[in-house]
Image 1 (cartoon, rainbow, N blue to C red):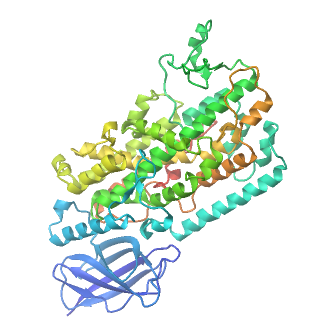
Image 2: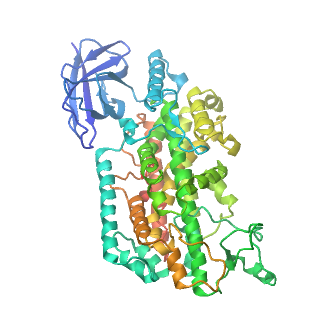
Length: 622
């Protein structure tokens, strides 16, 4: 009597996930292997079931092997996962895939239980993970010697891809995502043309002229900003809970760069109302100090310069560098150093989805030579690279960890600091999730120290990707479970919550261009009395730049149609019940925080929404 194996094959739901090619499948167990007589023709979004009768007991299943056959056209197949119900049991053995099957080679899917390098027991798993890493280190490069590339000297290294076609299909956008992204670019370009035509102006003459382009996709908060942007309280609020809450820090003494003119010593008691838009330089006269009591247009122009400077720091330092580029380093190191069986790979892989493609698009379209940043921002044309170089010195390990960063900036315990409150809550929730997974596989500190794949991954991030960042507090090795948990919490938080806090607010706070101008077209004022309406309008972005700012911030700040909320990825990388229970508790904790934030926001005139878990994407995808 034969042994009956019930096989279920799940194909991805994306466009073109199915295949017209035939696929061979066979099971490999510790006692032998058996091939399914029928050849699969995978159908998009379907879960197909097959029965394999084997004359012998295969023993404990180790692999499912796949080979796609084609004669003329290689029609790639996106396989989600394969499960097998073995004879005499109702339990299923899972073989996660979540990748494209293409070409004529054999793809081996190991049984999905997470294993450390020293826990394989059977030599077949060790050989598999070594072969997988060797292939990965070749796949994620077009330069044979390295998977890393230098985009700009002294800035975190990037995947070696000059264009999107250089990326492996497994890290590319799925078809729906690609179509939406490119449609949005075309829709934005069309909107720019319509706004240019609608204005019928060659230049701005008054602030109300910006209303001529203030239509299209807007939020309720955007309307509020439109009405209140000139108010001083509203100006200050943005640095606490706006789209860039990373710059504000508590001042305990008069800043050394703030030079007060003689006879104004009493202003030291009103430090929070003082504003100097240029730091002093010994080679030049002392910069003018601007105050709320100055002529309204002079004070407004001074605030516009501050908001413009914040725009540059937000986009380049806190958005591009501290989230996108750090997330890319994490992604490349994870693909190069951690095999699919490693528990840390299974933990991190949902949080690096689409990151390599969105960053490659940014390098080739947004911040490339002649790209959108050069066209619109006053740090374009090379200034953005200089700013990134300076920002690298401030990219410390502590700066990516909210408990340390907020303490350093003196923002702990401030009731109105909503970003700070929500970030700390999320950090703690992510830390509990990470700890729950780590403790399942690392029972002691010496197991952490003795994991060669984990240690190589840590070194790759710190020494290679982040350019010798051990000098800025990043670890080059992991010596304990606590240290590993902290480092992983930083990785997950950066790729999810921090990017959400920094990215989402662009549409709200930047759509009304005068509130946060992308560029200033005249030098900063040196006197207060000479500031006129013509000075203000001549300084703010012109019509083309304003339209471009609105279009790009809408494109980058809008909710993505295929958005996956934090912790709610559908892929089942972990197959053991304990790890699934940890993920389930993570989701429960996030739901509780969601309810807490919702209840709080109902009591606020300006709700802070950016760190609601349902609005945080599971990875850097835009």
